[in-house]
Image: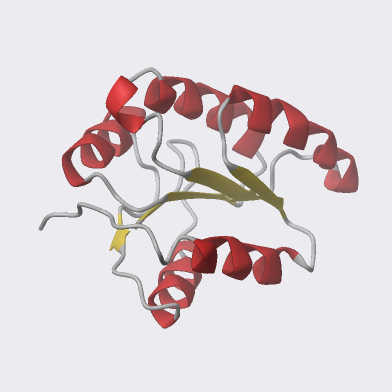
Length: 139
């Protein structure tokens, strides 16, 4: 699986947490780190063909950056079936940022996990459901 932030997000603790959580579920993880340019995320996803792409946002620009990134990923036919999820702070409106969830799903994300308390459990369930699939990760 690929774990990544967005180009505008310099936070790393969330990425380390997600990497450890996903590894605990038995998956290999490539952590692209913070401030990941769209082109790097796209090229690594094309190259590795992961079981899933996990995008985390802490700075509150998850909706804005996520809409741009999912369009780029889904624009490649070979990535249309790769599950892509986003989570964290989708906006700067607090709980009102939940209004972005439907737009992100319509744009092509397979799941959206806002920064609500129960979303770690929901993410675990979603990631565990992929265990029967096979990724083609290399290197």
